[in-house]
Length: 398
Image (cartoon, rainbow, N blue to C red; front, side):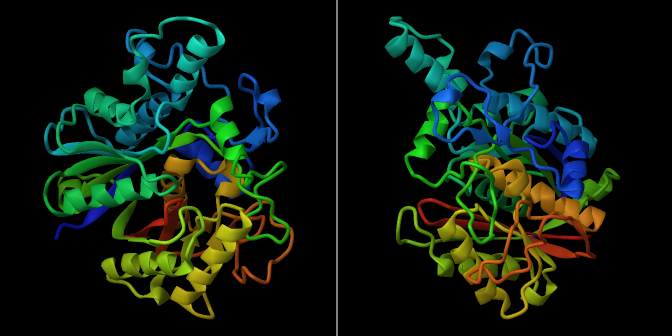
């Protein structure tokens, strides 16, 4: 079975529009969550989020193509270009290259614009580009087009596990020889009036801050952005002299087959154990876990139980970077995979910001409020989704 490594990463998120800025924010414990600025945000009950700010579309993309790009696609294109450049890959890999991206909502802002036009403004037609803009596979397809990737290309939509499922499938494509290089990760642009209003209905949004694992936490904070990683067969990467950031060592997934929204710690534990086993590691080898850590009462308690079930009474340090970039839903696993690579390559654990006091039901070392130096050689990245879907990746230093 071919070993798979990461040779490039790119991101756009609430912390920064690129990897260097994101790494700096993770090291500093800087929070990108703030007041929402989009149209009709003042009509919402919850008015904070991890917005991508100062994002001028004009001048950033080909003007002839821009009308096809919802923000969910724009973020993916920018992150994909950064990842390809870091990997030192030129367009034109053909059928030896592919794209698998996760997204939970696709072009939700395009949906909203179309509904506003017809229902609020009384128009009788919408743009002929509405469907190409809003479809979930648009980001993956545009990356394929821009970089000449004609191998496996698809999108994955499994709520908050979308990016991790996408990366797991990309790993499998390379392992089985269907591709040498895969662009993978996730993208989301859910921060619009309709997107946040829908989440308000669940009554799990925090009004002030995301405080994962902290006593008194009030819920999650939605974020936007994209993370794209270049997964590459190790032999292919070494043959061209590429810099290797880390190994994609293992992947595990499971289904709770229980409640549609309430998590089951046993399902989460099975996915973590599967990823560790797939990587050929033991729990003792894992030096850091990037938690799903949404900041909701139920998720954090359930995840803490699952982590202790896997690692026993001395689990490794655990942090939730959602406290800084927000919960980017279908993209969040990709942002957190990049945080894992930060830990592996920089020797620094990103913190859980906003932590106020320990919760007895979340008895973990959550790296509270400040980054911490640590010699990590292997880590897990957790993603647990509505629908009882769990997906976990293991990364290791090469």
